[in-house]
Every structure is written in structure tokens, then in C-alpha cells.
Image (tube, rainbow, N blue to C red; front, side):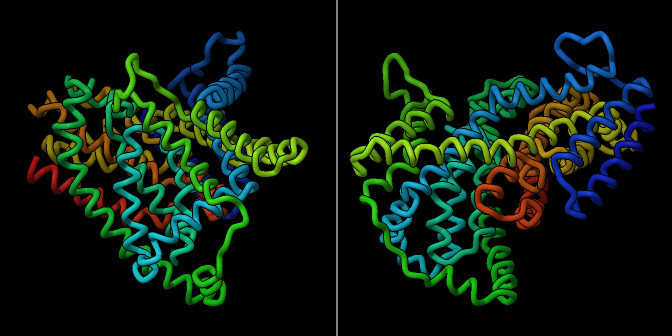
Length: 459
């Protein structure tokens, strides 16, 4: 029966892809397809609706699942995304983003001749930040607010700037990553040992390959796009730029990142330790920005007038980003309820391949599942519990199978047009989620191939 469910899931995936390609509302498509898959899963007896406290009627439980998905997202990542979206809009309104661009352009002016080197240099820096800020969407939005304007001014396109920003989040690593914690648990290792002894040795060469691939593909796509609209590209690169706010405002877009790094558990600068999460750092930064504005405009009325753009930014992000993330999660639940993930695993193990080949196949499947589901956590957590048993069956050390699977999940996420980080950064930057996912596919597909070969030969 599980293969019947998987076959039905594939039909839904095809229909969903067609509807999205035809520009139907993505929230509506994903939500309705997810509910339909969950309903069919119930009828064929594959899975019950997982809700906290049933309503007493299965049909109503389906809709309660939507409510709980909205609630859980709003309480966690949803509110964080909304505060970041509001902060980004507020930074634009008070021209703090302009100040950051102006200040950054001075030392980066030498990169005007090498804009793509500047762009790919963001990747390792962002990955270091990702260890301290283990939220792909959160870090992506922070970098869109602070780094993207700089990259655009030195001559790369919006899509190139956003794509290298999402590349900063393609390796879930460090002890704060949920996938890392789960992977270390499945590997029966301490999370620090897993990070230092297993993740870093493979992520470092993967990062070099990733940077090279982004350099090549970004230049190719930008030249291709520039041929279609040369006048617009010329304007972006050579337009004069000045600011009419104090240059101290340049610190405001970067302030949340600075706070998150300084007040993290890893630096241990304070005793007892002080730790901030992303949302708290955004709110603190907002109040600092309000004080800056009050000093500059010397008018409480004007200060409050500008502050409304923070709330409006939160509302826009809720309507465009949070609703899409919730719909994507319902769609993911629908795939799981039809046994799509379990069928993929069972089908791979029954083909009679060796443990190494099975590991490669499952890593590729997880990459594709993350692309389809828009979530590295969902795809890895779905497969993860099965890995130790598969490794034991083939006489392998669990970490040798777990590591490439864990990394492939986070890479697959960045190639998905329904992933939170892709949706959020694309919406804020004003680019197409599908174009962004397409930009990421070749570099991440190539890096996945490199990882699988490198893992077999050297680790």
C-alpha cells in the first residue's frame, strides 16, 4: 500500500509543478494539494492526522492541522521573519541601508573590476555567521538587508547577490543546528566532535568548489540577462550614489548580526553567559534605530511616522512569506502522509546495492526530497531514524552514511522555490523564487556530486 501512496504522491507533485509553472497562487496550490494528499492518506489507511488534541471528527482535524501549522510557525520562525522584514523596511525608510552601501563602497571600490570575486567571498563569511545564527531564513534576510545593496553597487545583479547569500546557508553545521544535533545523535557522537572531526573536514573543500561554481554560473547568467536588458544593467552598475543621513547609520543594518555574535554561547565573553536569539536581537536593534532617528529628526511626530513602516513591513512579510511557508509545510505533510519518503527508502534498499551505493542513492534522494519539500529538516528528519539500521545492515559506521545525507538535505533546501530561505530572500529582494532556485541548482548539484565522490575517496 505504501508504494500506491508514493505513486499517488508523484501524481500530485507533477500537478503541483504544472500549476506553479502556470503562475497560479503558490500558497493556494500548496495548501490545497497538501490537504488533498493528507485526505487520501487517511482514506487508504496510511496515516492519521497528527494534531494536538483531536476535534473528534477526522475531517475537522485536517483543518485543525492548518491552524496548528500557522500557530507553530507564528510562534517561532514566522514572528522572527516578520520582525526581520519589518526591520528591513524600516532600514530602507530611514536610509540606513543607503548609509551602509556608501560606507562599504569605499573599501570595496577596488572590487569594481572584480565584482564576482567580491560576491563569492561572501559565502565563507556567511557560513561562519550561520554557525552562530542557525536560521537559514533569518540569516538570509539579515544579509539581504546588509550585504545585497553593496554587491549590487559593485556591479552584480540582484539574482547573483541573493543567490550567493542563500549559498551562505547551504551547510547546516555547528552545534546549534537542529540537523547537526540529530545527525550527531544518530551517529552516536558528541555534537562538538561531529562538527569538528567530521563536518569541517568535508565542508571546507566543498566550500571552495561551491565558490568556484557560483563564480562561473553567476557570470554566465548575468551576461545572458544583460544581453536582454543592457540599459537597465548599465544603470545599476554606474549610477551615482550619495546619502543624506549620518554615516553612523551604516551600523544599524549590521547591528542584529553583531549582537547575535557577541552575545552567543560560543564566544563566552560574559560570566554568567548572555545569549540572544534572532528575534530579540532585531527588537533591540529597532529600539536603537528609533533613538538614532529621534536624535536626527528631533521630532517625535516624525519618528513615529517613520516607525509605521516597521509594522507595514511585518504585515507584507506575513502576507507574502509566512503564509507561503505554512502552505509549503502542509504540502510536505501531505507527501509524508502518503508514504512518499518511506517508499523511497524501501525501494532503494531492496535493489541489492552495496552500503556505499545505498548511501549515495539515499543522499541524492534526500537532496531531491528537500527540493520538493522546501525543508532540509523535514527531509533529513524523515530519513534520519532509518539510517543507523541501514548502516548496521551493511556493516558501515553510521556517521559515514549520516554525514553526506545531513549535508545533502541542507543543500537541497536552497534549490527549492518553496523553501523558507528562498521565499523570504527572493520576496524581500524583489526577484523570482523560481529564478533564484534555478541559479542555485547548478552550483549545489555540482557540489553535491563533489561531496559524494570526496566522501567515498577520502573519508
